[in-house]
Length: 430
Ligand SMILES: NC(=O)C1=CN([C@@H]2O[C@H](COP(=O)(O)OP(=O)(O)OC[C@H]3O[C@@H](n4cnc5c(N)ncnc54)[C@H](O)[C@@H]3O)[C@@H](O)[C@H]2O)C=CC1
Image 1 (cartoon, rainbow, N blue to C red):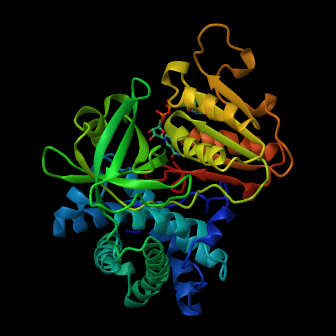
Image 2: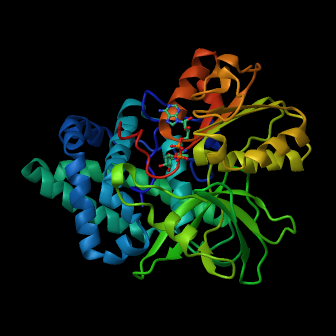
Image 3: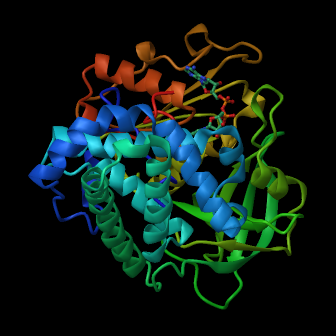
C-alpha cells in the first residue's frame, strides 16, 4: 500500500529521475481542486508536524483490524524499528507538497517507485480503501477538532489523487506482467544456494508450476515470500542477477541483514541463509522495478557498494549477452575484497565486454592495493566520459556521496539513476 515504498527524489536533495517517466499508467496529471489546495496548504504545517504520530496511529489501527497484514504483507522488522512509519510520513508530505508547489507536474518518480513495489507485493485496489479508512481515522484521532469535514475532504482528495494514479499504474504493470490484478505469485523450487562471501549467497530457483521463466529487464527485482517458523509469511525484494545458463531458472542474491547496534537481524535474509536449501519451495513475484538499463548506446557508470552490486551484475550480464559496445565504467566499494560479492564474476564480465574500466575500492584492502582505491568511493581518479548515464545502488550515504561527486563533475542530475532497497529514509529526511 502506499506506505510501502516512498521515494526520495522529491526532496531538494534528490530530484526526479526522468527514467521513470516511461512507467505505464502515469499519464494523467493529477490536480488538486482550488478549494482543497487552499485547505491543504493551510493545514499542511499541522498535518506535517503530526505525521509521525498519525503514521503510528494508522499502523496501530490497521494492524488491530487486520493482523494478517502485519504477519503476511508488511515488513515486521521495519514496523518494529519505525523505519516504515517514517517512510509513510515522508511519502504523504512529499506528495502533498509536490501537488501544491508544482501543480500540473506529476511527481512521477515518487509514484513510479511505489507502483512497482506495490505490484511486486500484489497490492490490489480494494486495499487502498482500507488504508483510507484507517489513515483518516488516525488523522482525526491525532488532530482532533482541527480536522473539520472540509479539511478531511481536502486531504481525502490528496489521498485519492495519489491512490487512483497508483491503482492505474499498478493495473498496467499487472497487464504487462500478464497476471490478474495482484496475482503475481508463483512457486519456485530452489536448485542451488552458492555462497558468495561470508554473508552473501546466490540463489538459483526454477518455476515449479510448469510455466516458463519470466522475462525481466536488468535492474529489476522480485519479491520473495517465505514462511517463517512462527507461521508468518514475510516478503522482501531481491534484485535479479541473471537467468540460469540453461534458461530454466533465475538467479538472485541475498546478504544477511545484520541488526544495527545489537538490533534484531533481518528475518527473511536470515531465514534464507540458515534454513532454505536446494529442493525447498519459495514463492516469487513477477519481476518489477523501474531502475533498468536504458536502451541507448552512450557510456555508462555502474556504481555500487556492498550488496548494491546485485542489480549491476544483472546489467553487466545483459551487456555481455548482447555484445554491447557501450563504454562502461564499473565502480564498486566494499569493506574488503572478502566481503565483495560477485568480485570475480564482475572482473570476468568486464574482461569479456572489453569496453569496461573497473574501479574497486576497499576500506581494508589486502596486499599491495593502490592508495587511490583505498577507502570509500572517490571519483577523483575516475574518468567520466561526456554523455554518461550513471546507475547507483548501495547504502544511502554511499549514493548521496556519489551523486554529489557526479553533480560536481557536471553530470546532469537527470542522468543519475539509483535503486533504493527497503523503506526509503531519504524522503523522510533521516
Ligand atoms: N540501494 C539501497 O537502498 C541499498 C541499501 N543497502 C542497505 O545498506 C545497508 C548496508 O549494506 P551493506 O551491503 O552491508 O553495505 P556495507 O555496510 O558493507 O557498506 C558497503 C560499502 O558502502 C560504502 N559506504 C558505506 N557507508 C558510506 C558512507 N557513509 N559514505 C560513503 N560510502 C559509504 C563503503 O565503501 C562500504 O565499504 C543494509 O542495511 C542494506 O539493506 C544496501 C545496498 C543497497
